[in-house]
Length: 456
Image (cartoon, rainbow, N blue to C red; front, top):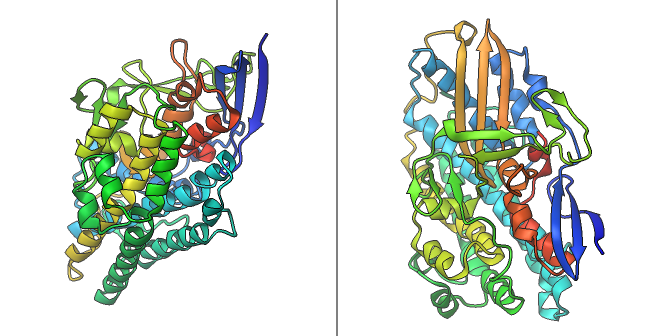
């Protein structure tokens, strides 16, 4: 006899529903439901291409800056596809990477302390874990404070956060002073210190040398990451939450992130092999359909017909990070490994941001105006970006100075979209077979749920 339970998850970005089909105490089937329709792609139709720079950052209040970067890269690619070369100063490239990286850092810190660690208060009654209790816990409050500090770096260069719109084809409308850069470096140094004392429990130099989990346990002193990993092993979270063991990253970003597709071996990413599938989505190419089998406003995304996870874990694997290659061999793509990868990026990206801040030449131009007005440009183009949750793809088609079509494939669509005729989504696959509602919710959160991006 089947038992069906439907839950609206809290502690996620937006709203997501989890429908579980139970049989003999296990989850026999799972449906991840994105219940809201938002329609940004429809809003963009017939707008000026430059309007997308203001509209798209409003897709999400947490990772809107990634949508800005993906948009400007899409517009620059549109110029290039029509034969118009775009010059982007190195200074502008550095500033874009710094602000995008800062948004990723704020998301990862906030996610770890506000979304992930409070789950363990439900798994066991341990007074030592009260420091992670929402609102009251000292570490919860420290995490929230740290996530707010890094946003000041975006404000220094972009003027505001969220919904920043400071970058345009040809560069950025930002001309920082040496004082601005010094202030940003001080903020990053403060966050590196926070990570060393609270998250990793050692100097970042020691952490970067670690090759396996035992080495981390030996070196880390009373850190929140160590607490998390020990709890994972205690509750077998190093063994559950496994998905397809396939990883996708769509673009390069600093020495930390390399584009690629890893199935058994790593290969180059090819946009022509990406396809959206709407078999179980309300939203289809033919319009809105409501047959009984359809259950989500998100579409499924497939690469060569297969579901792939895109995430910080995917970035670590495609970048051939030795620590995570070793973890993957031992623990596969489990809850513990997927979550650690996201935490790992915090310190590594902070170090990269500091190096990039030092490279900025304030005397260099921030912007080089394109030779043609964008109203004169027509054609199709793609823009790629690595956002906090994984790979983001924008595409545009412009005719007679107006957007004819705009399409967005977000990380959450890859991970949390519905099934297709052959496969569950990566998150549905990771949940199937579990024995408790709480574990199902924890595994879902390990993908860093963002329903507003899923149903953009």
